[in-house]
Image (cartoon, rainbow, N blue to C red; front, side, top):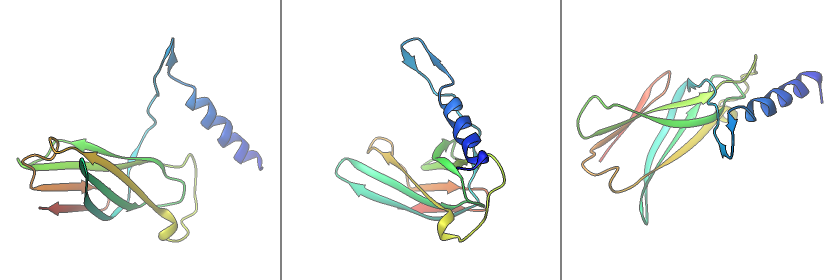
Amino acid sequence: MTRLAWLALATTLAVTGCGRTGGGTTVTPLATAPAAVIQSAELVPNSTGRLLIVTAVAPTQGYWNAALVPRAADVPGQLAFDFVATPPPGPAPVLTERSREITVATYLSPRDSAGIREITVSGAGNARAIRF
């Protein structure tokens, strides 16, 4: 491994250990940023609710720790999420769009989606809405 790879690995392991106290484990959140472009968003029913599955394209390689973060919706009957991910620690190559895709899913119970007519997912470059 190169020196830079070892440094990145050591930093990751050091940060992973941060925030632990006593018998419980807490994780110190790292800075996240909106992903560049929301490519697709779909709502898939399952036996106990629905899965919101979102794919975005990051601006470079190396984005990780992606999540859908709920936020206050502007309109009643709407759920809103921000697609965020932790950027790489330093400069990263761009390469192909397909190689920069990140997919995240979150579970919505029937209670979570009761009375909801629209779900909006926002990234840094755009937003996608699902209406039902």
